[in-house]
Structures are given as structure tokens and as C-alpha cells.
Image 1: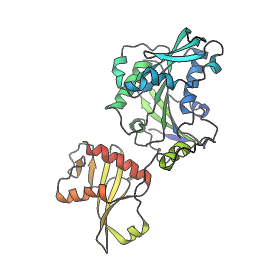
Image 2: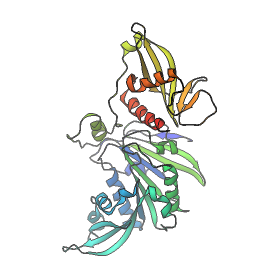
Image 3: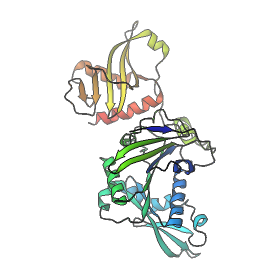
Image 4: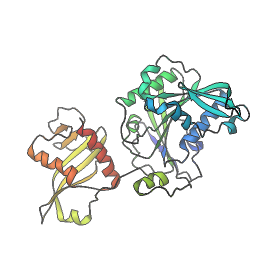
Length: 362
């Protein structure tokens, strides 16, 4: 990452619009925020207008083949403003065998004048598309780049880069990456060097720059301003993500000032997965001798001779791959993760839990 530029906050609107992020003229546009604020609608509207005005086709990418069935793909495009954009020329949009077509639908349900405007593709099938020609495609949409359940494809970033290369070939295209604020532990943030994600304010756009094979690549990251629309159907942590655009978290036990004042640190270790790190302090109450973990994000360099549980392979004897205890003492310490762990905040608890799940399956 060469630099990051943060602009002032955008004001809340009825629904999300692309106007601000398009002014950044970035090759990659990462758009994340509250659920159902119009992110996908705005991008579909943009792609259809670009087809109308410049004959630019588009590709919508979903993670799995099961995500691009005809039923789901037709549902995805069901809110596209076809008549508003094309007037009397087209009044419907539908998918068939990976194609997205515009057409005129008569009262009897017969489609006429079908015209190809785009494609739907599955990231899991990226290698199958290598021989395809996408000469008129200028816009690519990746939906749900932050996975709802925290699961990603093996080598997902490699597949993403492969499919972008297949579609773009030697041309410049514009990529829109859309997601709800579910988890900041997305491999796409790491791939694009998005370092400010933990501190970015709602309603701002951060610009990042990385060196590509043929020059500098610009990535615009928009943490969407909250919209004015609110739903009464959601509650708890999900309501914070749905109605306020806050990162989705679960409830976790919090450390209290009283606990810290009555305890002392007896051991410290680090849990990490790639660039995500947590500092785990084994604390002991001076009066009761009760032992518990106090877990916070790790934002500073790891000191020498510190035990680190990681997914990385290294010759350092203090680094342990996975969460497998080597001694009885280690077994007792790691058991505290499931029985006596306290966190600085819910977001730390949520992301730590995701990291632990990944390490346990190594």
C-alpha cells in the first residue's frame, strides 16, 4: 500500500447512490454497509445505464454455482429499473444459461427482441470460463465479498484474480465489490492492503494504491453512510448491522475494571491468522487464584520469545501451528479459550472466535 486518503463523511440519504465513489475513478470499488440500503440496486442501475449509453456489458459474480441458478439470478435482477432506463424498448430482464438478456415482454408472457447485456458467473467455476470471450464487458460486480458464514472458497483470492484476468484480458474494467458489514476478517481486505478497516468511520471513502504489473491500481473503499430507512423487524446485534451499518457482532463476556484491578498477568500468548492478531493475557485473581483470559486486538509488533499460535509455518520454536497443545500446561491454558475468556469488546470476541475456528481445523 502506497497511501490512503480519507475524505469527509457523506450524509445519510434515502438509499445508497454511487455518485461519491465514482468520483474517485478507481479500478476496484469496495462498497460495504448496512443491509438493504440499495448497494446492489445502485450498481445494477449503473451497469444497465452503461449498456444503454455505451453498449458496455457486465458480469455479476457470486461465490458458488448454486448461487447462480436461473431462479436466484432472476430474483437478483427482479428489482432492476429496466423500463425507467430503456423506456418502450425493453420492459424485462432475465437470465438463461449464464446470460443476462433484456427483452420486451407482452401480455401473453412472450419475450421478443432479446438482447444480451451481461452474464452471471460463479467464482467456484472460474477455471471453466478461461476460454470465454468477454470483449464488450467493462463492468464486473462481485456480490457478498464478505461471506455471511465466514466460509470462503479454497484459494478464493486466486480464483477471483483468475476470473478478473479472464474477463478483462488486456483491457481496463471497473470492478464493484459489494457486501454487508458482517465481518472485517475478509481475505479481500488483506489482498488489497486495506489497513484502515478497523478505524474507518461510517460514511467515508478511503483510497488505497497498490502497484500492479502495468502501473498503479487504485482501490476506493466506501463504508456507506446510513440511510434514513429503518426496519422494526430486527433486534440485537443483527439490528446494528441491518439498520446502522455497524459490523455484525455476537455478545461476549466483557472484562471489567474490577477484574483487572484484582488480578495480575501470569502469562501472555498471541493468537494469529495471517495478519489478524490477538493478545491473550492469562490473568489470576490475587485473592481467589481464579484464572481467566483477557483478550484484546494485537496491534503492535510481537516481542521475541512470545508464544504464538498461528496458521503460518516457521522455524521459530515459540510459534505453534494450529491450536494443538504440546504440554499439559498448554492444554490447561488453551482450555480457557472455551471456558473463561473475557474480551475488550464484542467485535474482538466475534473476530477472535472466527480466528480460533480456523486454527482448530489446521
